[in-house]
Length: 137
Image (cartoon, rainbow, N blue to C red):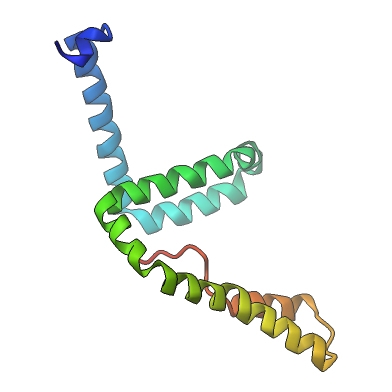
């Protein structure tokens, strides 16, 4: 007996679900083909529509989790698990680049007696690589 029949789904419901999923995939593929343009459009929309940006602000953690899930789904489980063997080396690189270098720069400024201005703080943050990059997996 089919799972759909046990759950009470009919063939029409399954067909509608499949067509909705296919439409969503086609929409996302279309957006992906203009990814950079959509990124810029989203940033401009956030600036021009502050009320909408404020309404989305509480949902940012869930949206970031969704994007990470979609990225992991795109990469695939075998590549994700296979990449974990390099995890210790990557973790070391992350700790050095994301933690040690920016803190080392700030420590240098403090020990040198240089006042930490917003500009120097920005320089220190720019010296560390971004945590999320647009590099293809």
